[in-house]
Length: 283
Length: 283
Image 1: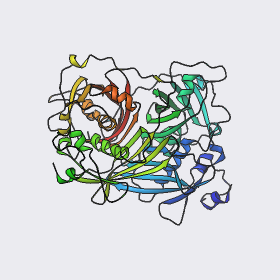
Image 2: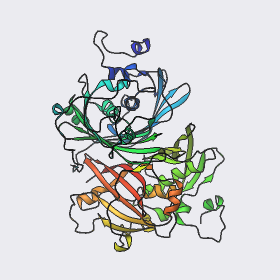
Image 3: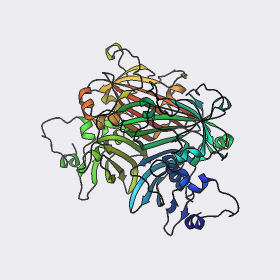
C-alpha cells in the first residue's frame, strides 16, 4: 500500500480492502472541493486506467460531498486525455442546487491539465407511476453459461466474473460478425455488493463494438460516456453481489467514430442503468 | 428587432432573417470566450425557451470559436435551472485540444448563475470502415402522413412541420398507451437547410414520453440531453431542408424520472443522430 493511500485511510489496517474500494478511495486536501486519489494497477487498461473506474471515481467524488443531495440520476464523463498511472486531483463543484436535484461539475487533474471531466445530476426520488418498457433480454441463467472474459492483458477485467451469452471478444481467426450485440452476465469476482460507483464502472464493461464487427481488435477508445441511473439505493441493495445482465450494441460506425447503447439489469430483472457512449476507432 | 440583435448583425438589413438564425445569433463581448445572446419569443416553450434551442445555442457558441477543430461529435446539455426570457451570456472554454479532437465546456449564465451547462466534443473525421447497424423504421412517405403537431401553446413547435406516423401527442379523452414510441416526419417550416445547430434542436423535438403512456399531459422536463452526431457537414448539406424521420422511446419510468432514446434519419435513410435524455416527471 502506498503512503498516499495510507494517509486517506479510515479503515482497520488488518482488514483486506477490496480492490474496488481501494481504487475509489479519495482523500481530502487543504482545498475545499478538491480531493486526491490515485490509479491502481489492479484496474489498468491497455493504456492508463479502465475508463469505467475513472467514471466511478468521479461519481464517488460527488457522493462524498457534504452538501450532496440525493442519489445519482445522470452522469456524463468525457475522456479528454489519457490518465497517467499515479496520483490525480479531483475538483468538484456544485453548479446548481435546486429543491430536489443538484448539478455537479467534476474534473480530474494531472500535471496541471484536465484529463477527464464530468457533469453529474443527483436528485431525490419520490414515488410515481412506474413502468419498465424495455424488455429484459431472454438469456440462460448464469450457471448455464460458460465463464470466459477479456484477454489477460486487460488487467481490470480480471476483477469481474464474465459469462458471455453472445458476442464474446473475437479470438484469433475470428470472422467479422453482422451484429455488434454483446450480452453477458457479470459480477464482481470477490462478491462486492453493488453500489452507485460499481454500477458506474460496469456501465463501461463492454469491449469496443468494432472488434466484434471486424472480427479483430484494433485501436479504439471511449470519448464520452453517459449513464442514466434507474435504480435507487434500495434496488442496489437488493441486487447485492449477484450477477448483472449487461447488453450493448452499436447504432452506427462512421468516419472514425461509433456510438454504443447499453443496459444493465439485475439478476431479478430490474433495469438498473441505461448507458451510452461515443467511441473513436481506427479500423 | 432588438438593438442587441442589431449590434451583432453582419447581414444585410433588407433580407428577412430566419427565426432559427435569429435565435442562435451570438455577439462577441469584451471578454474572450464570452458571448451574448437572447431568447426569442418564436422559440418559447411552456416555461422559458425550447430546450432544443438552448442546446443549439450552446453548440453554436463552440462552432464560432476561432480555435475550434472539426465538427461536433458529442454534446451533453444539462438543464440546471429555467432560462428566463431575455438576454443571456455564454462562457465557452476549450478544456483540452488534442490532435484530432477537442473538448469544450460551455455555460449559459443569467443573473450571475449558471442556468444550463454543456460539454461538447468536436473532432476531425476521416474515412474508415462504416456501417449503419440500426435499421431505419419502416414508415410511409411524408406525403402520405397527415400534418399535425403539438398544442398551439407550445410556440416553438410552430417552427416545424410535423407529420406523426405514430405516437402523436395525446388529445382530450386520450387513453394511456402501452408503448412510448413516437415516430414523425419533421422539417423546418420555412425550408431552412439542416446544419449542426438545427440538428441539435431537432434532437429535442419530442414531447415527454410520459404523456403518451399516461394519455395526458403533466409536468415534465428534460434534465440532461446527450446527442451523438453521426452525420458530417456533407451529409447535412445533402439532407438540405427535406424531412427528417425522428423516432423516440423510453426505457424505464421510475420514481420521478424516465430516460428517452431517440434517432434522427435523413429522408434518404442516413442515420444523422442518436440522442438520449433523462427527464423528470410528476405523473
